[in-house]
Length: 270
Image (cartoon, rainbow, N blue to C red):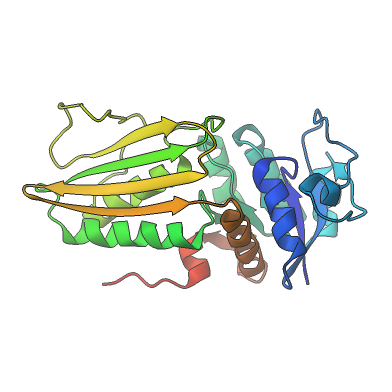
C-alpha cells in the first residue's frame, strides 16, 4: 500500500479522497493536514470523511505528515500551495497538486521542486476531463484558427472562488497549444450576447450556481457548423479516484513535472 498524506483534508476534495482511499487497494491515507486555524484540528479524518474511524487526527504539522507518507496530495488553497510544494521538496516526497487559482510564486516553487522530486499538477483529476483536454488540443490543431472561434464555458457550485476554473484555463491552453499560439488571458471572459470578440479567438464564459459539481464545454464555431466537446461531472468522487490514481503513479515517477495525460498514458497524435 502506498502511504498518502492529504493536505487540505477538511475540504470537499480532501474528505472525498479519504472516502475513496477507504475503498482502494492501492493507497492508504496515513496523515491529514489542515490550516492551523481550522476548527477541525484534532478530529479523526475517517469520521470527518463519513467513514469508519482511522485513528488519525487532523493536524496542521505538514512536516510530520510528510515524514509518515510516500506521496502527498495537496487540495488546500492557493495561498498555501507554494509552502506545501516547498515542504515536499525539502522532504523529498512526490506531490500531486490539485489546488487551482495559484500564481507565479507557485509556478516557481513547482519548477524548483521538479528538479529533484516528481510533481504532478492537475487542475482536474478526472480521467474524462483529461481526455477532453487532449481532444480539444487535437481539434484546435486540425481546425483553421481563422475560421473557428473557440468559446469555453464552465459551470460550478456557488462556493467555487476561482474563475475561470483551473480546468477551463487548461482547456484554453490546450486549444492555444494546438494552434501554436500563446495561452489566452484568464480575463478574456465573455457573455452569451457579446459581439465584440476577436475572430478566431479563445474566450471564456463562467457560471456559478447551486451545488453543480462541474461542467465544461468547448465550442468550435465556424461558418455554418459547430463542434462541441464537453464533460459533465455528477459525482465529486471521480476527482478523488483520479487523485488517488495520480498519487499512486507519481509515487513511482522520476523527478520532473507531470500532468494527468502522463497518468493515463495518452500519446499526442502527430
